[in-house]
Image (cartoon, rainbow, N blue to C red; front, side):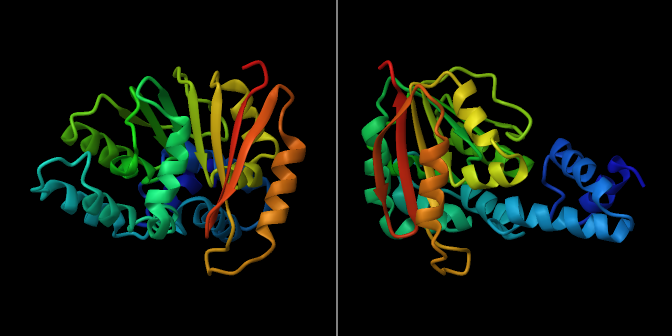
Length: 265
């Protein structure tokens, strides 16, 4: 079997049917030379997909989120924090923020104002947190590898009457071709580095953003502390490209945030 045929086989699984085809084919092409048996290739591909996608979002999450969105009867969806929390709870990454959502997004919004354009890469369900923002940005470009997430976000933006957009992007191989001045990269850094060493820093370098807010998980998916704080701090601080300055570092219960800016600001 070639990479396309293996991608066909993997895509038949309901778990991975929403993952962008180019992502599937890339992972299959990278994995294929490492194994002799087809079943081992497929197993390894699914392991990677579990790491970068499935572990964050259960199969039923999109269906439930679509139902919440289509049945919304509140007065203003873009300021409704209760509705926002109900959808954020369906994705592991945003669900971890809910206990401190107000504090976390107050912190993030110190670096976002009404004139800013945000580029959110590997966004997941993070854009549903807009009701927690103290100031909504002028533009918001959200990118993810899941087609169902993209469709859901665009429906949400439309319902909120916001001029924002979501689109597919495999950040391992492509950098979004949009203009913005604030980059969000929440918990994405380790996933990019695991797939292609140095890629996360490449994304930061190549996007013409004055400010980047980058976060790292502090606990494993099972809730264990594995020394991730020290490990990711060393990885990020030692590898940060020249020309960027760390202007802030803050920890919450499950997540560590860095704010970096270009040194000539």
